[in-house]
Length: 346
Image 1 (spheres, rainbow, N blue to C red):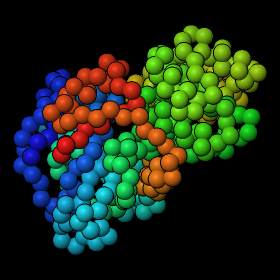
Image 2 (cartoon, rainbow, N blue to C red; image 1 turned 90 degrees about the horizontal axis):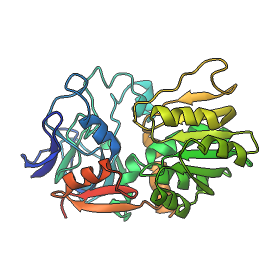
Image 3 (tube, rainbow, N blue to C red; image 1 turned 45 degrees about the horizontal axis):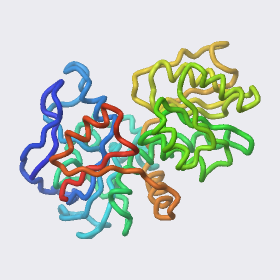
Image 4 (cartoon, rainbow, N blue to C red; image 1 turned 60 degrees about the vertical axis):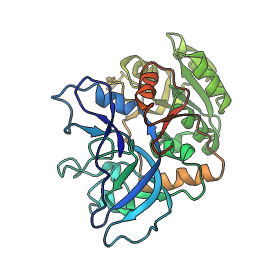
C-alpha cells in the first residue's frame, strides 16, 4: 500500500510503498477515508535526532477516519463497514485516567512505549491503518469523513481547552482566540455555541481574520503590538476572562498575559515553543496558566455530536496521497485556509 512517511531527519516526507498491515488480536483494520494535516507534524519533523522520541521511518497522520475493513480475534463492538474516526492519544487503558476516558493524561503511556498514531505509531496517511483497540474508535454515521477527521484534533483540542474555561465565560465576559487557522477557527465556533462570551480573534493575516469573522468572531483584530491595548479598550479596561493561544510562541504568550483580566484563564495550546513567566505581580491576580493536551474520549464523542448537529463547520482543502508533501509545504508557508485533509484512497 501507499503511505506518507517521515524517513530522514530534516528531510521532507515521502510517499512510499509499504506492506499492508494485518490486524492482530484485539486490533481493527481501517481503510482510511481521510487523514488530517497538522502543525504538530511539522513540529515533529523540525526536531533533531536527539529530541525525536521515536524511531524513523514514521507513517504520518494523527487525525484519521476510515471504514472498518477487518477485525482481529476477539474484537466486538464494531462491524466491518462501520464509518469511524480514531481517538489519537492512546494510553495504557487501565489506569484511573484511562478508565475515565482521559487517555490524553495517561501517566504510563510514555514509559510503556505507547504512542499515538502518526506520532510514534504508524499513522493514518496510508491506504490502511491498524488501530490498537476498539475503545479508540468513535462512530460517525453518515458524517462526511473529510469534515469529521479534523475534529479528532483540531476540534477536540480547543473543545477540551474551552471546557476548562467555561466557568469564567459568563454573560458579559470576553474570550480571545490567538491564531485563527485550523484549531482557531473551530475554537471560535465552539465558543460561539457553548458560551455567551464576546469573542475576539487575533491573527497576522487578513485572510485568517476574514475566516474568523465568517465563523462567528464578534471582533477580528491584527495580532500586533497594539492588540493587547485594543482588547483592554474593548473590555472597558477589565481584560479577557479567557485567552486561548493557538500559536504558542513567546510573543503571543506575553500578549495573552497583557490582555488577560483578573481571575482569568490563559491556555497555551499552540506548539510554538514559547513560555510565560509566572509569578506574583508578573501576571494578573488569580490568573491561571495551563497547557492542555488533546482531549478525552468522551469529549471527542461530544465534538462529533456537535458536528452531526450542524454546530461545527470545518474549512478544508483536500489532497490526494501523492499530493500530501505539497500540503505540508503549503501548511508550513501559512497558505492553508482552515485544515488540509489527505484522501489516501481517492
